Image (cartoon, rainbow, N blue to C red; front, side, top):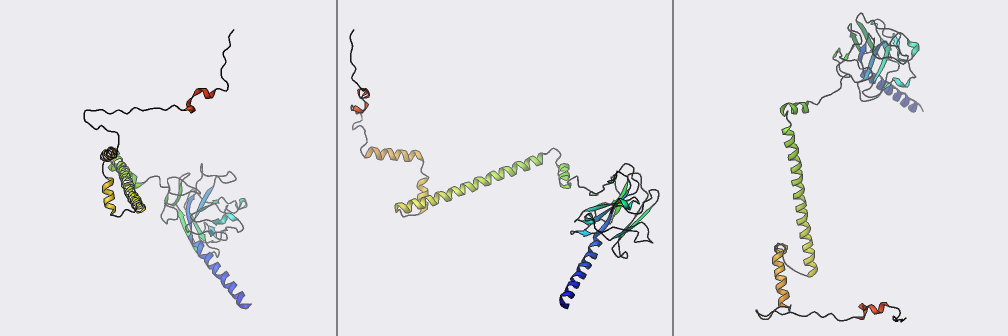
Length: 298
């Protein structure tokens, strides 16, 4: 029994250690301090917001972690437990509102950010002692955000457009296509490439079908020779199959004439055989009458 309890405690300890390590993947991804016309919260209020990003490939539970804007008070606001939305999926984000309205819910901190001066923001683990991430946000213009150039990156800068709960950088171009367009502005290379691919595919299909036809013909010839008891090489059969049809027709006609077909015995005499059509009662129309017609005279 003691061994079972010890094993259970060990598993819980390992799970707790894994949880503590998983929070290290959290990043302060983007911050907006002066919100005039930007994002609004569920209460239709505009306030400063902080975006937290999960930079790992696993789900991270951020409940119990602390976020603060005071270096001397790392436990200023604890992200409360019991809210399912504190589970951040892989490469996903959560938005915290720095509006000093914690009664509005889990994601509303008890402090505000000052848009007229630099703001220090730090994220601590559940112990309040281990620093996960920290940023110093410079003074920003209205509706301007400060964050990572790419989600999870340590390189922070003023972003051209705020992207709350969305990717900080989106690829809208393809370098390979742009490079190809520069080298081939008229599309001639693209057209030639497409045509060569199509014709190459057609040529390949032609060769494949021709090869299949030859194989099928060879197999059929072998089976025919085997069924008729003909011995010999398949090559000879192939050579005979290559004789033109006109030659084969002439040979067939000659054999027919030789075996007794109608022909003239002399060069100057034309032999004509009369074709007789014998009468058959089956073709007589009188058998189609049920009664013999009677002639009535008036």
